[in-house]
Amino acid sequence: MHSEAETESQKITPETRKVLVAAGIGHFIEWYDVGAYGLLATFLAANFFVDGNPTAALLSTFAVSAIGFVLRPLGGLVFGPLGDRIGRQRTLAIVVLLTSGSTFAMGVLPTYDSVGVLAPVLLVIARMVQGFGAGGETSNAVALLFEHSPRTRRGFMTSWMDGIGFIASVAGSGLTLALITVLGDDTMKDWGWRIPFIIALPLGLVGLYIRVKLEDSPAFRELEAAGEVSDSPTKEAFRTGAKPMLVLCGVLVFKAIGHWALVAFLPSYLSGDLGFSTTGAFTVTTVAMAITAAAVPLMGALSDRVGRKPMLIAGSAGCVVLIWPAFFLMSIGTVASAIAGMLLLGLLIAAFDGALSAAMAEQFPARIRSGAMAIPYNLAVSVFGGTVPYVATWLIASTGYRLAPSFYVMLLAAITLVVTITSVRETAARRIEAAQQIPAATEQEARPARQL
Image (cartoon, rainbow, N blue to C red; front, side, top):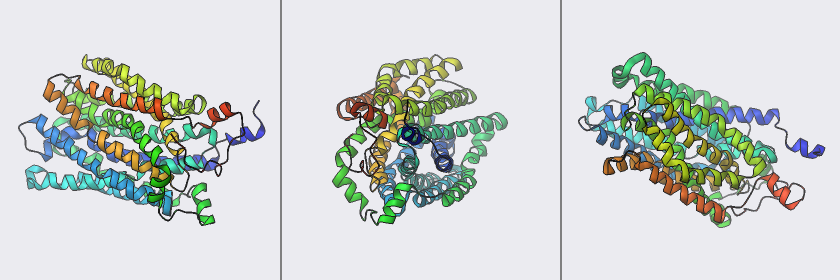
């Protein structure tokens, strides 16, 4: 039997639901914006680079994508600590303007046929601004939702951010599929590819309105009221949380490689290397990511019960064992087998992502939480996530083996698995309380940074 206090601590209040909706809509817009580039990579390659060698043009497109990721750590270094200084809500409002505006710009850029080499230069600039803004999204959104959530439901609540990210990818993939079906490949290549980018502007304005109306988290408001907001959250984060930040980099390797392989590489891989029609590739992507999106919150809820560490191990270890079979299933050539292969990878990522957001936030006190998460998160995403489409495409071109990217993903998942087993400690409230058999700690008692 749960005591009345324990039951109350598990309730998700209307205020928390409001924050989930508000943060989630903004997060949807951010990931729709960023994912649109990967989903439309083949069309961008045809419009912004010299014709003649489709593989070289696609590599160039992915190289531009990687350049955008170069600025993510800088964006995280700016907007993560900014969230600790002026608040998560205000920072998120700034971020949504940058990413939606730069994505809209991509949709109205002149092509190579119109202005020559200036076209890819402008694409690079827009992509860099997009990456800079995106560097501040995840850490602030997770911190805001985490600090509004009941202690024993934080895995479930924060996992919605990752689930919503996949929903955004589903929306982008579904929209692209609909446009291809209605317009046809030729019209899509001519001007239809612009539509998903242009839509980013009105979506961004909606997100801005919602975030401006949102109240900041109780933890940040308490810090403000007590005059305890950190004057230099970046320095404080490195001084008091350097070790968990370093370990977090290793944990995030699989997050970066898995998520971005699923969202940014596999759609073009299916249509380019595996010979699927454009419609078939987007059908596979849409179905697999829709199921993955639904699975993430379920995995988050499970992490509240069994712990963060078992879920992180299950996701990364499962990938080490099953990533080659997943790629093999996709290579068989049928839509059903491709969905099965992509979904296998997606469910492993869902298990990992379901526990990850809460696990990250639980390492740091509110004074430095956003910045301390943003720095390792964006570093890992930049180095591994941003380069995965380029590296994977290069591996196939160099080896002639269509399943070569599976070994790259396997290697990086193994790194995360080793770091998780050797350096991660359990942080889920229920597992700690069960192990220690003591009353739940308060937020103030939990303030000192904990080792992962």
